[in-house]
Image 1 (tube, rainbow, N blue to C red):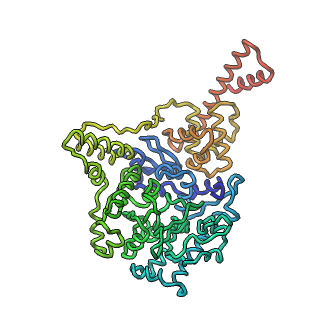
Image 2 (cartoon, helix red, strand yellow):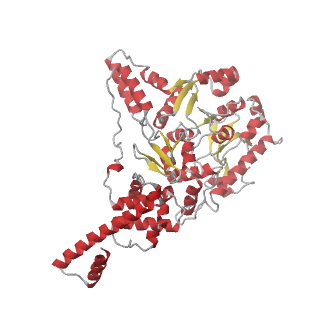
Image 3 (cartoon, rainbow, N blue to C red):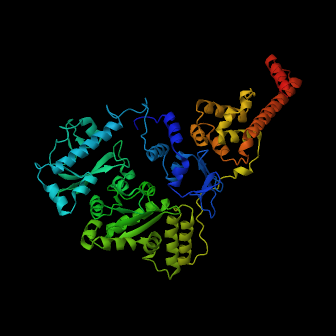
Length: 569
């Protein structure tokens, strides 16, 4: 990162985002009264208990206790860290995330990340120009012509060519940035040379269209056949897929995404009108890849070669994808004939035949049990026991939900086992907050956190004494202080301002407390709770002072305090 994300930007971002619109883009919400409801995405339930409040900019599940604001939803639903969630939320409303310079986070050389993105964009355009340059050998153009790639597809994917020259880029661009981007390789003697030479170039773009890396294919017989950019400050291959930006530009939220193995598979399918394919970047699919793709679709089809390597790749992909299969998400498997890949098959059989193969792709459940039981004799106890051992390890990685229950049921049918308990170790239901003791401190703080406008209550302006030392009053003062500085904050915004603070856990619990108070009497209830809290603290402190007076006597300051407390009774 080039620096920290300013807190004022996060507050502004949460003001711009409507948590209802955000969550509705992930799971359909239904309006009920002033709130919106759905079946909770974080636990299995038959009736909706997941509620989203537009006024509070906050969601809460009355079944499992999950709750939070827009950032928290993205972190939990899409398995993102805080920074990734902020970046996704900013992308959702179409704004960039600013950075503050940090003394502990140095800039990249003499340039920031924006410069690194910019130089790779310029290099991508430069390679695209080289592809069209008649002074080059023409091999790259001929290769694309032989593969039937149109000019439109070449432009959409920004395809290019790196001429077979050792020092082409250094003469055109900043060498320091080129090295940081992995486009130059530095030698021990301090000199450098172009990483990509004599290869057709596939720019890899992130979801915002920024070029973050390159894939390259050799035109001759040199090895390696494919070569990718190394890991850089803006490129982590386990988190990116090729073709996703181009897919989203054409499809938005596709009904399904095809996950293929090669760049040219993505290009070939696009050439035939199938614009919903992406490829991993020379690595086996990871959970991060599936989490990324499931943000944009409910179904992923694995479209791998039918040889032994393809079978192994498909199984590795299934292993990575299982933990991501929440209810409503699907993976299917389409294995191709041996010695065929999507590129060759769609050219040989045509689009209709390829689409028919897609429609007939195996559901993950069928492929899963077929693969595991293929070499086992399920007529024997030994075979069924072996299937149980194999399957149980994988099924434990599935999220709780109907799909996991049905997979367990199918396993039990196959092995004639009565019950398989897959309750994850360490998993526990959240405590039922509504059963906790109701106190003036809980009521006052819960009302304020859930209704920040109560900070403007007249009785607070009239001078109620909140200076006493008690956990409840200390928290109340801190919440009021935050609201005083940022009066526009909603409940969701308040929650974000306590992220990482000692009171975060307490605040998270209090914003979930069911407060069944009509809006017309909110201020009256709040004032009453605060007054009871103050009186409770006064009573306790006064009792301690009276006890001390009888045993040890009081100091002058303690006597003044006792008189003040007596006057408040």
